[in-house]
Structure formats: structure tokens, C-alpha cells
Image (tube, rainbow, N blue to C red; front, side, top):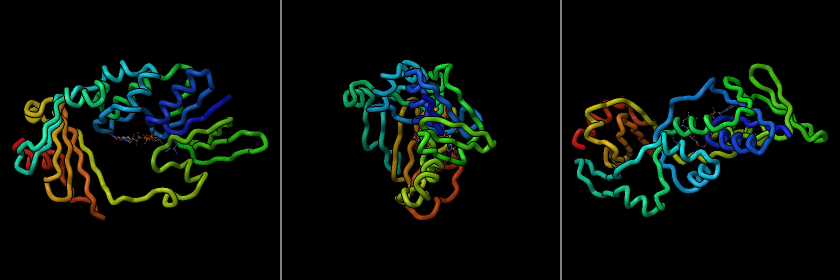
Length: 247
Ligand SMILES: Cc1cc2nc3c(=O)[nH]c(=O)nc-3n(C[C@H](O)[C@H](O)[C@H](O)COP(=O)(O)OP(=O)(O)OC[C@H]3O[C@@H](n4cnc5c(N)ncnc54)[C@H](O)[C@@H]3O)c2cc1C
């Protein structure tokens, strides 16, 4: 049996790992030429944690991950309103929690791929042609090459090309909830020392924005808003230093 997996995100890497370990001939296609550094901190627990453990990749995830000491919720004056320690969080999830940057999660899954997986980076899936009678599917890539397989798995994310080619345009399936989000990572040693190993959350920077920061040598800041228009452009440094200097 031959399987083509489209997309080397978290889902694609996971399924390719499992298929290849079951001895299935797996070709893996990803539009990015290589691993990408983009992404922010993910609290990794629950079903994802269980799946990583079953796959045998959990030790590497823990090695690459971070232990956050506490989570604090602050108001617009920097006053702590709620504090949750790691011990309290641990007691909720039985200690099965690690914080990890999204690129490090991708890295752990990539490093776990068996050598038998053929990973083709830097090309996109652009066409599909299924031969129902033969039970196969032929996939066309942007570089003009083709691949015929018994099964095609679409793991190409929220704006999936595969879904569009198979079921129609995105707007038949996506429901816009009115949120925008932006994330930044940048180095700020002074803030790093002040904020070490802590998550700080506030929704009071202004009435419509929300920011989430963690500090482990780099800042990871995220803003979301619920307006129909994008928020005004704020550089990461300005966002942190002008609005959060009291933290
Ligand atoms: C670079 C990046 C950074 C992210 N950072 C975060 C984060 O910090 N926190 C968070 O919660 N979520 C993040 N996400 C989203 C998160 O990874 C996904 O929403 C979630 O993990 C679901 O994973 P997925 O595998 O379904 O999709 P994704 O992780 O989005 O992966 C889809 C993959 O398919 C590839 N792809 C798309 N179209 C094609 C095509 N036609 N041919 C070949 N390849 C294609 C994309 O390049 C991507 O690698 C990020 C996604 C990306 C791509």
C-alpha cells in the first residue's frame, strides 16, 4: 500500500510517523522547503500529550519544552488578579503538561520520522485525479511531477487545497468568528529577567485586545481582537514596553 500525505504540519507529521512505523510506503509533501521557525508557545497536554507518549516522541518533547512556574492574570495597572502555580496546574492534568514552542514540536516530530519516509519539501499539491475503478489517486505537484497512491491524506491545514479540490471553496466550510490574531517572538533580556518562567495574561490593555506573554529568554506575545478590522500596527517592543512596563 502506498500513501501520500499532503502537509508537514503537526497532523501530517504525526500521521506520516505512524504510517511509516506500520510499514506503509509513505510519501510526504510539504510546500515549505524546510522546517520553519514561526510559531509561539503551546500548552501541550490532554489528547496530544497521550498521542505523543504512545508514539514514543514524548521524551524529546519534554526535552525541548519549558516548565512554566506560574500563570498570572493582571489588570491594566499590572496588579495580579489571579495566580495559578505550576503545582496547581499539574494537579489538574496529573503532571502531564509541558509548554513547547510550535517549531520545537514540529522539530521533535520531524526527528522522529523513520528513514523510510520520503519527504519532499518545497513543492505544493495542485491537482487530484482519482481513478475509482483502479482504486488509486494521482496527485499533481506544482513542479509538474505526479504521484499515484492508494490513499491520499490531506493534512494541509485550515485553508486546505485538498479540501478545496475535493469539496469546493473554503467559504462553504469556514465560519469566520471575527477574530484576528498576531504573534511575535523577540529578545528582551531585561524583561526576561523580570518575567522568568511565567505566563502573564491580560485582556485589559484596551477593551478589545488580549495579550499573552511568556518569558523564557524570548518574549512570545500574542494579540487577538474581535473587530472586523485589523488592530493598529504595534511593533512587539512598543506593545510590551509601552503597555506592560509595570509587570
Ligand atoms: C508555520 C506555522 C506556525 C504555526 N504556529 C502555531 C502556534 O504557534 N500555535 C498554534 O496554536 N498554532 C500554530 N499553527 C497552527 C497549528 O499548527 C495548526 O492549526 C494545528 O496544529 C493543526 O495542524 P495541521 O497539521 O492540521 O495544520 P498546519 O500545522 O497548519 O499544517 C499544514 C501544513 O500543510 C502545508 N501545506 C498547505 N497547503 C499545502 C499544499 N497545497 N501542498 C503541500 N503542503 C501544503 C503547510 O505549509 C503546513 O506545513 C501554526 C501553523 C503553521 C503552518
